[in-house]
Amino acid sequence: MRKQKLILMVAPVANPLKSELFAFPPLGLLYVAALTPSSYEIILYDENVEPQPLNVNDFADQVDLVALTVMTSQAPRAYQLADEFRKRGIPVVMGGIHPTILPQEAKQHASAVIIGEAEGTWEKFLIDWESNSIQPFYRNERFPSLEGLPFPRRDLLSRESYIIPDTINVFRGCPHNCSFCSVTRFFGRTYRYRPLPEVIREIEKILVQSPVSPGRKFLGNLLWKRISHPIIGFMDDNIFGGEKTRDYTAKLLKALIPLKFYWGGQASVNIAKDEKLLELAAKSGCKVLFIGLESINPKSLKEARKGVNLRENYYKAVKTFHKHGIAVIGAFVFGFDSDDPHIFRETLEFSQAVKLDAMQVSILTPLPGTALWEKLEKENRIITKDWKMYDFTYAVYKPRNFTPEELKNAREQAHRRAYSLKSILKRFPWIDYRRWVVYSVLNYGYRKQIFKRI
Image (cartoon, rainbow, N blue to C red):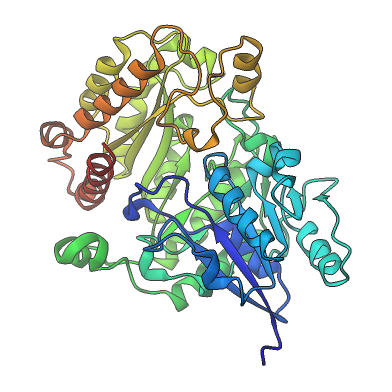
């Protein structure tokens, strides 16, 4: 007879046509699991990497509670799962960015909704659940401190399902106010960072428990043999933080150097101005940075409130990253009101001229709760609220200079051209062997993903 209560934690899939190569662990759920007392048993089901979608009948007779993390494009699938579990009398709790922005909508499908970050609210919910007094909504009155956070429950992962199973967060919050980004609504506009000793202890624990690099399943024998260090992914929106956190970042990078592992993360393009910090990043094992360049159109950057991104500095910035052996994934967004049909060709030409190691192309998407959403809603330009289409590959609004279908097709064509063999060879870093392996992995992965979807 089972004594422990069983909680099923689910990361629902948004799009079944997905690439296993670039799936990352649901770090938020791993934190929630770490906040859960050991008296509970936990099963983690990440639909994004499992071979089959979750079958409710397989778990209905086992679980006592279901917890779902939900981004906007995942909402329809999350609601479907929640409705099926609740029909069987199993309570469901939801959290994440989408339920935080639209809690009343989420509550129609959930027993309870956690608004904002889970620390403090998840523990309160469990107490109420045990006493049969679940409240409809749980929210923190203020953003929680990051001091003393438990380490994520990585033992729950199916490690072989991820190219980088070990991911970590250092910062929360972002001071920028980009028109299309919902991060600040969830984490706030002030950087909060974890105590440095706690970060280092977590990394040391990862390196002891997981000393092996990603295996042959993803990279094949040739690339696998070329990776000599463990790999960790920093999942922060900007691993370098802001101007006020530069001292902390420098101390962090210095502390990483003797640990001898490779890492990648996300950063703002303006960090290229701080070469001393970039030099430290390279010495600490940084091999790739995801940079939100957004657009090469200055008017579009102004629309996005990304004045920090100055097109004339892009060439110099990418060159600076490459100087330190750091590969750059340039992220671009198409569909701003200032974009015209030339933007697709010009962006591709830019990526080849500057030799971007990889590029990710998205359609401007007005996520609920963003300034962009409010603007387009006010202008009556939102054409669908079918959330599964909010995955950055559809035009869910009326673009100014394209039809929605034209924008969707142009983005797909741009991605195909970006990862044609001709483009890959043209961008290849022939004279910089430091980036060969990373470049090969990125372009293999994106090409596989794109030609699978299209």
